[in-house]
Length: 147
Image (tube, helix red, strand yellow):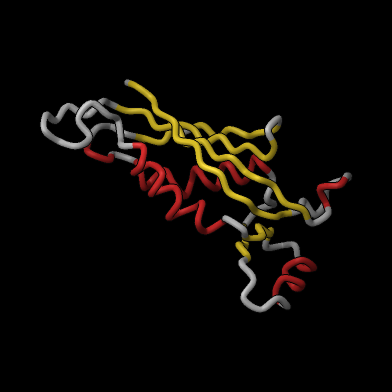
């Protein structure tokens, strides 16, 4: 087995409603998402993916379609954060993503893993699987979700 990792970036806002410090305020981050896949190297002479686990551009395409483009320049809000949801509803056409849990780095990493895992699993029939999502909230703070 071998692993490959693709890194993507996006900007999003959030808040942690019950946080005892500044994170309870509306703010944003330049998130960095690392997607690690594990599997067997494709052995298919003459095929574009020969010698690869999965083409990095395809890893990116899937992540962009299901997470990055959806969350980029959006406000990630917990469904139970009534005050902020009501405020966001007053902004016509605002890009808001409502989540079933508080948008901490840990929860966001777990959500991303859950969204992306089915899209990578078994690609090319090569036992490919998503094994880790690492989400950087800042250059010095990140959360890992391992599958």
